[in-house]
Length: 311
Image (cartoon, rainbow, N blue to C red):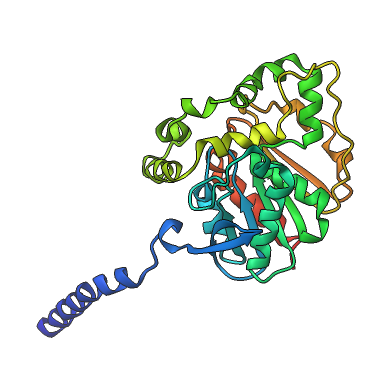
């Protein structure tokens, strides 16, 4: 019995000694410490992005006010099977911040994503976009269908739906006042990094957000609205949605129904704008930042949906 106890004690001591080694070798849990950092060249504009995993390429595009880290939970899940890339859009964090409204026109934002796909040595990718990233993703699908194989959108209805609702829905027009105000000269002077990060619920993540926003350019952020959003001086009775090409790849769309900036009425009829299968997931209780408000549901649904379409 004494010999058995001694052996158990020795084994316990060995495992205790090895524990720090195992802990040291284990990868950090958060993607912040695990992600690879890269840059793409988009006609002279540096576009920073992070990457994790190997396999078919997924490119994720954030919105306002945000940066690549918004996708941390989705990257953690999807990187087991995919090469997951999360972009800092121009003006944000570690990407370049060119001056001038004209440098934030939608075709340039779309080309930034093309540059990232090229930097990864690929011809196409699965494209995921939220908010302004969703606008870029919709536009990419309509103007460069050869660049993508599937499209995932989060809380950004099709541009035609948004324009229709601003024209016909007084509540949506009222709720778009913030975007009209962003277009006013000097509106960026009212912004601070801390204020922009106020929506972030996770305390540890908020620290990263404040740091990223201090590296960003507030005027560049608002130039997205000045260059691409309907203008407040447009008469709602004459605002006519543009006739846009149909999307020719499968689409998965998430919408947190608590979003007050983009009301769900704009989702109606999206199925008429997509030539392939269209899957809509509405999530009660989730707000505009649905990828964080309902991160597990978004991540697992996205993983299952992509697995059925990506080979």
